[in-house]
Length: 322
Image (cartoon, rainbow, N blue to C red; front, side, top):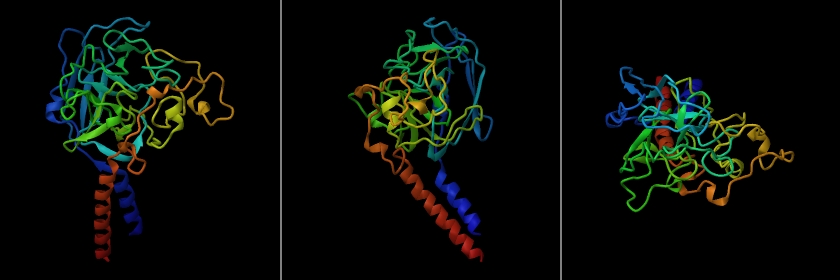
């Protein structure tokens, strides 16, 4: 019996369910038909949406690097009812979501695990704010506000692979400015009318800092050990989670030849001389009341209360059985 109680306790504390994409949000996934872009959302499965897309942008692109956009044949499954994990997940290198036009949204890092948008590792983007990886994947690291994002109020940009929507920075509850990273939790999201959503901003990490929920599709590799209290990575690669310990590249063709991130920690006495410099103070992530260590990202506290009530209910039922 106690084993059953422990299993229920462990599971209920780690995961809760939350609202996913609404029918209105799904209706926003479309393309103009002027380019080779395609995107569809299959809703027939009871557990997940299947997003099929070419990954080719629905706007002109420019050859800012040697790479050319090609059909990526994306078939990505995302949960209809996202599962929230109290152990937040590190966003992987490369794709972390898709726009409403089926283009990849990448994490904020370039090759060598440095900031792809600002600082010494900043990459070159075309006039539509994107560029292409060596594998032909056109993608965005930052707000695509030149060709995709229209700056309308509460505008949907896309969806993260954990099933939560991604919105733009122009929001209805803040009238005098765009939303900033300081308004969001460490995963770069917040709750609006009971639904969790991410926002793209002009500040680091631009789209996602970590996954608020669990990823359904096993083709997307994530690690659920994001250290929300880490400071070393904040001051070295500007990253919010101590996750990319295996090194590797993340972006559209920059970097390379740098030591693995784990070797470049500021507290490493044998830190290699060719580690990249840390960010300027203006580039470091903001710390807000939402970024408290106890609840992880500012939303886990209420979920834990509900979970404990569920556990007590199960325990009482178990004793009744005796």
